[in-house]
Length: 259
Image (tube, rainbow, N blue to C red; front, side):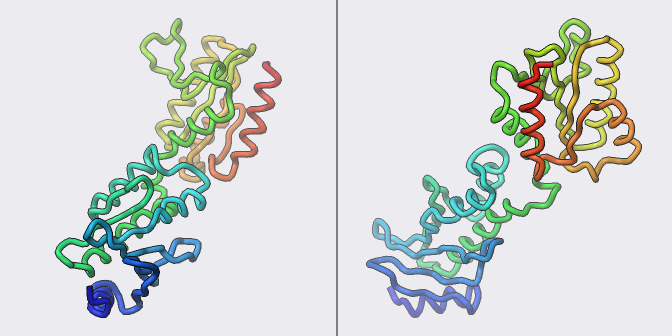
């Protein structure tokens, strides 16, 4: 293998700032200008493996993101987004290590695809609200499951007596108290309208209950829709992100009071 030829191919295919330095036997560090959102550079290595060459991050990328986001990113919707990003550039996830084989000695193409994949993967830390929207309900459920005992939490509840057709569902119901807590996850105007109608209907049925809502982004809700909802909901939080401690404290109070 001619190191200078590979270095030249890397620079020509990716950018002039790429460099290549040996570090151990059959292992080279690939320096690039590309970084994570927090400023750390991508970790990329060119390695000889089973008679061929691969580019590897040596399991650094997903670990870095999990620390940065302080959560598991291997499962759920974020995991699906990451897997889709990797597949688009023929990058494999080998038990947390991201790798791409160098095919037909096309080192430059392999590095180009690998860098593009890493950039797409790291996008999960600052996706637009539209793309991250699909994770809100998942985050909502995981948050409640972590803070409410399993035997007191029921997702997708409906009143079997009054509502056998499930027209007025509740995202989560916290039980074993005189007034169960109805909890709603609210990503958009339609969901807020349905929650408003449901709470008014429960009042008409004279059900004993308390109510709480967590908006995905309260600022995105139309004012008239929000005004109607706040008239009937007892407690609401503008978002899950940034309010975890407040919501957890409120849930603790509710669970302990058993009102």
